[in-house]
Length: 275
Image (tube, rainbow, N blue to C red; front, side, top):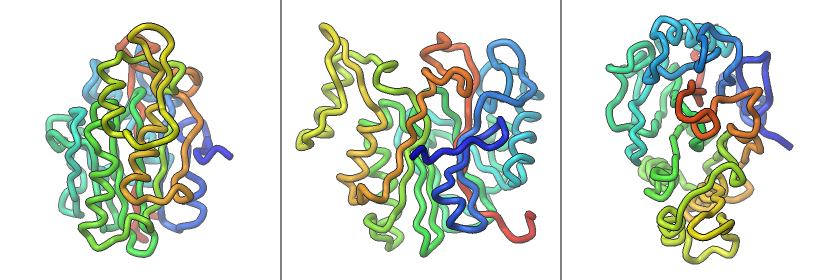
């Protein structure tokens, strides 16, 4: 069953989690229901594309209202296709929420043990990763394009939890809407990097379609890397949505030729006084 459930027109919620853990907000926005025009129509949440900053800030307000999580509690990252995960606290609330120049530099993942923070990242084909340890309340979010994936950001996040005394076997992980293997063609250079990461797995997450051209399943690569890092397969849920195929819901960097908007992944525990 699809774990990401459409709410209104503006966002998908991870119902497996939000229905079980009161106060948790976790999901992925759509491209619909916002203020932006043209290539960015309409709920573009990326401050780093050439959209009107005023429109994007308005769109972020729209999502904030829809999910019930105030903008001053959001954290945002530069996202440079690297593997650095930043531990954030309430002191970081609002950083990068409305000003990209203030977003955390060279950061592609967030981790926190605190309530009242919404961890946000932007996407237009790359893989959104979500993490939660229900007993401690620890949560994480990561941005995994092919560079971050082969760089090991999934395992890095498992390592951050482990450093906090949390057994990776107790982590729940979700892999969100992102480009599917049929829409994602890469060359042998990328596939060789994947092979180096997954030398000992039986299920190969790539398929050669012609010389030096491969379909690559980035969701499956990340799932296998999570399992190698100690996350149990039964604790990993994977969205079947493709950001390229499902044009009615999503922007897609590949499909739209690079000039397009961004969706947002988000996860956070609401504080009682937010409601």
